Image 1 (cartoon, rainbow, N blue to C red):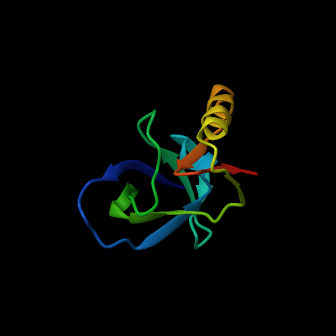
Image 2 (tube, rainbow, N blue to C red):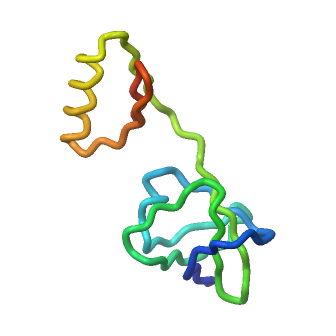
Length: 109
């Protein structure tokens, strides 16, 4: 089994891709499968989140590009800034990951 051990800061040409939902892109120790069905062990520095487009380096010099999986989300829209702030506070207080924009919130279903 290949081991992914580091993130790359430079631009390199990836030879494989790894598509993961946000929940799994937050983990630093994980057994996953590349998009070509090859099993790999993700063993990165703790506390880092993988972002779409980042490059990883595995054993034997294999370069892997991270892709964010399509996920179902709920959009919450309002013109009332007080209600938007209140909803953001309550969701954040429960550690619900959310995206905030002008007049809207987005959360995972």
